[in-house]
Length: 351
Length: 260
Image 1 (tube, rainbow over the protein chains, first blue to last red):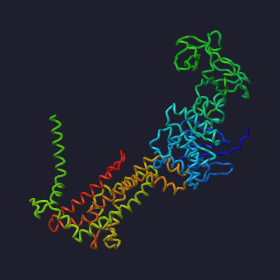
Image 2 (image 1 turned 180 degrees about the horizontal axis):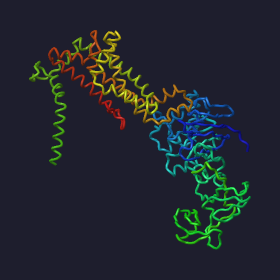
Image 3 (image 1 turned 90 degrees about the horizontal axis):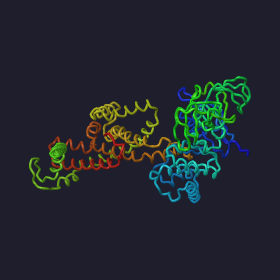
Image 4 (image 1 turned 180 degrees about the vertical axis):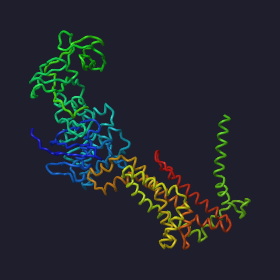
């Protein structure tokens, strides 16, 4: 499936008073894609979104929309709409007027406006709420009005700035599913900003991991989780054991004082690397059945599984397993070549 | 129990102390006898006399004309200023807000004399225009102080949301920002109106050519000897101001009470 690029960021840079917030990033965003900018607070994800929306001027670099440079196009002339953090609904208007706001500016005739607003209310499941005052709505309902208010303008791209941040966990999960459905139904590009890695992995076609204003990795949720490119991504996405190792040759890596077969290649001989093993990929066995032995130092019950810390040599492994071992037990740690993921060691990616 | 009685008595005494003069004034505005010392029966004739006195009706007209025009002008200027101040950087905002407080804290007599000096040095004849200008001047800070809290309460992305939906900056101001802060604007206007009706000192120094307001009339009547109609006029002014204050207080919602 070949999809056209709709937005391109080239060398985009933004700094405030000598602090670089977004540092020369390049990114292609395709039509109909659900793309998420993910990173800790202060990583530049929101600033990037605001530059695409036209609310911040880049210091350097360009933004292209369908091949046209839009750096100097004001927000009200961009075919892009935004769902703001905490919604920014117009509190002096009712639900209908909030949603109709953009249509009134475009001088859409009354009958058509009514139809389009009704269609939106149906989409966000708020039929019958037209006359309600926005202050009388719950957080989730306000959220939906904000989405309807943006989508009714039929933008080519919808920007969402941590739109679920103010909702409680259960509602957030429901809204995640609803947003994904909506995106499929209306068939437009969603650019979504969040610091919640689980949310990003659940919803996105593509995840862009950012840190310190720099893109760390772009890929599908599965790639990002299974093949993190560096220590930062591995650490930020999910739990992980990150060890220092040496890549001796293709498919052979050593760490924890032993050599292991792995599935990675393309490194130079004896290159120092970082090795990631996800906690759920380590099997607990009897000591004699495994390559590595260790002693359990703590056990925490997490519901679905137990989370154990196991000391082995000078490294403490985190293991998630349904097979509980008591503190002090000597156990074996077992993992296969496909469970080992080798990454280049970066100098600028310290946590 | 005893503590409660003492508390209540103490409070009663304080209020008596505060409101006794005003009560006496109101009671005597209904006094048949011209004498200030003794009660000669109930009457409304002093109120009737007020409206037959051409000087007083003229002062009443000027008082409300100046109050209306000055509060209107001050509200427009003050609202625009408040929006500007709200969008300033941290340091600039601090400086301007302190400068804005200065006229509020400045003794009226200083403001009055200063304005008079300015008008005279500019060769302006003291009269209606100078009184109006001086009222606008002392009203602006109050309008700013009542609009700013509304701006602060507003979601900071509100203007951006309007632009995002296709509104030009001017349209966003007209259809989103102004309506959102309207409660603060109206409170500011009422406040300015009240202060203008209320003012004596600044008006006294900055008027002339036969233009007077009610406060000045009362002052000059009092100098010629107290007539009971002064009591009646003062009572009417008091009632006007109290009503306006009640409206203002009812409008101020939690969190943005004014510091008058």
